[in-house]
Amino acid sequence: MKKIIRLLLAIVLTVLWGCENDGLEVNDIRDLEVPEGFVLSAGTSTVFKNSSYAYDTEADWVAKIPANEKRFTHGDRLYDNPLNSGNGLGPVYAGYSCGSCHRNAGRTKPGLWTQNGQDPDGTPVYGSGTYGFSSMLVYVTRKNGAFFQDYGRVIHDQSIMGVTAEGKLECRWHSEQFTFPDGEPYELVYPEYTITDWYKPTYRDTDDPIRPEDLFCTVRVPLRHVGMGQMMALDPNEIEALAQKSNYPEYGISGRCNYITERGQLRLGLSGNKAQHADLTVELGFSSDMGVTNSRYPEEICEGQMQMQQGSMMGLLYDKLDISTEDMEDVDYYLHGLGVPARRLGSASTQVDYKGKRISERQLIEKGEQMFFEAKCHLCHVTTLHTKPRGAALLNGTELPWLGNQTIHPYSDYLLHDMGSEIMGVGLNDNYVSGLARGNEWRTTPLWGIGLQEKVNAHTYFLHDGRARNLQEAILWHGGEGEASKNLFKKMHKDDRSALIKFLESL
Image (cartoon, rainbow, N blue to C red; front, side, top):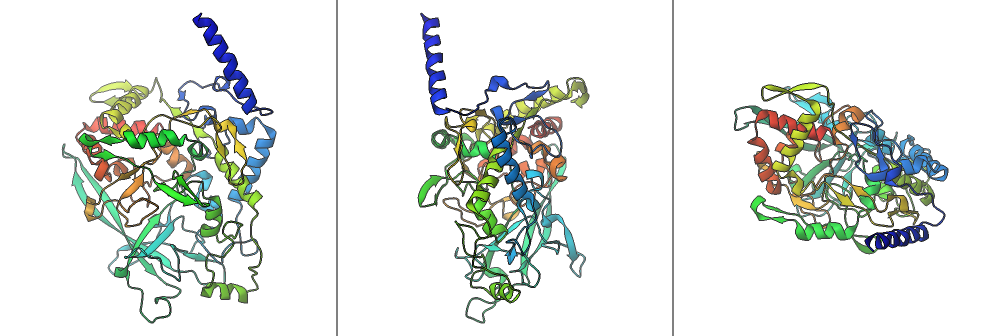
């Protein structure tokens, strides 16, 4: 009888799947061949690359369907193609293409770590520079939370020829020495920001200068575009259930959802450092980051400002949109269609040292995974989530059922957590409110693909502003709800700390 029931259930599920996906080619997890030494990260969207293109490879369901591949390729081209003043860039901007800040769909090295001068006392100065882009967004608000009328929420530190940038960012790094309980020293660095070269250094319609002490400044470096489609296909009920469950008073952890009103609807926030967006922000990126007008944001980002007049004197026209909705949706398609790198288990034959004995690299990674759980990292960096049955929908309504019904391993709960304000007197509190997220609250960063960032982008700067120079420093910046896990990590044997880092590098 049980066999008959299982057979009938299988038939019903097959019929329902066929009805929902009539005329579509679909992939099944059983169609994937998993190479030795790899583990699936994102179901049928898992890719098995360990190179600089690990983030920038289409998922299997894209590559095997010509119509999908065509749209993906077009979106990829639009994502990477450099813009100029003749095809929509500016007048002011932060990057000249999506790919200028997200090289290979990753995190281009930010200008915060590119020295462009020094103070009279020899202190190195980093920041915007003069390279046409700086791979970062500079947010400013007045201390009462209001934006500057002449600038909006972002200082655009680049501009087309003949136009004045809104301002330039200078960064000076301050360091502090610490020690682990076992006596091993470590160092953390904290950025101090200064805005220079304001295009209008006074408050609107006054002669009052903008004083550094009157504003909050925070910087965001690019996010990895790994798992974007899976994130948009997440089951919101599962995320909200995690928020209800995420209460571990013994570790000081209590995650919560961010909600944001976009397109006139109150929706669950998932994307962005503070889960402050309900979509992949393609339209906002074209507008705010590159100055490219579109149907959702038809005005120039410097509308009514001096730069508009400067651009007009150069013969630039502002009477038509710079990019179509169809083209933007193809960029959205590209982002949704990117594969997620498989977990790498490590070599079973390569030997490494661990507590005075020789073990395989694979065993070291397994030990690191054990340490990850012992430090309770998994309470926020949740290992396993699921996507909705119908997958995701793009900005112009195209549905992507191939992203549906997948078991994925992003190592994130996509919830907000208080990350503290105590380390070096500031912690990770940037005083910037996004939706319901306060300045000290951040979305749990998805960890999948994190171990390949150095291969993809040739650097290991982490956290929202790149202050962590490696994964260990990223852990040690955890305060607030991350304090207990950080302390458990600090108390570990040195080899166990190294094993945990090795595990993170395998993701």
